[in-house]
Length: 148
Image (tube, rainbow, N blue to C red; front, side, top):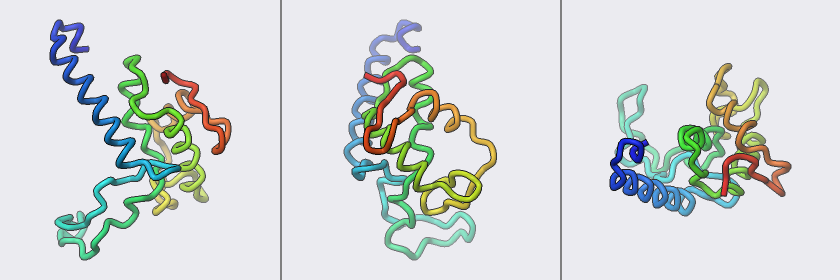
């Protein structure tokens, strides 16, 4: 979009920053079969939203959980026709494993740490999974969307 305004330098900077950030996510958040919910697992300085008090844990509960939301941040770049910034095979594996690990009685929960926390209507995830990422099986994930 910035290129269309003629600001090619800022467009290049944003593209380069996005590519570098995607490499950081792939390196720091990938656990071998899924992307973690939170890379910074430390609970130091975190305030409980309900009580207003600091958490007493050393690590955030569920930081390494499976999550159905990994692909949500990719909706805008993919709709704009950009290539998938994350490794497509890893993303396909993540979606497959997250669906399996978060599946509860009434659908997929937000994370594997809270499978019973289900919202009845989710649009972005519901769009992303079948349209862009349709893995054949967890063993052989395949990206069928706009990937390199």
